[in-house]
Image (cartoon, rainbow, N blue to C red; front, side, top):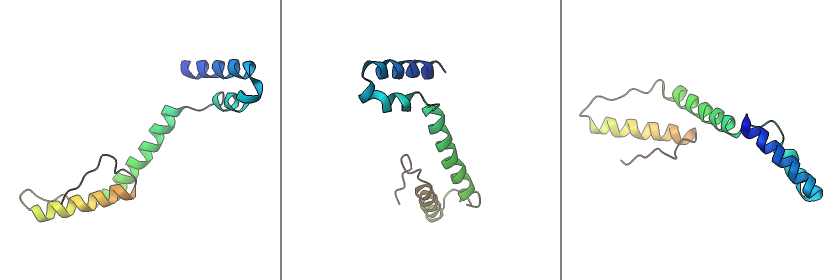
Length: 92
């Protein structure tokens, strides 16, 4: 909340200092946007999509390397599909 107030005040001050150049920026900065909330909501949508896509995926038992590799590849493909590949690594 405090950050929003500061950015709104900064936007108004810069708009007054150079009205022609900063008018668009001031209007954009003073709108009711919360970057942290937007990022969080987007991450949660992707995470929910990942959970929904992997709910039927069977986790293989220990010792079966072929099944583990197949599981890892399927999970990687799902993560790629829902755009969560930044931290996902799969090496067959």
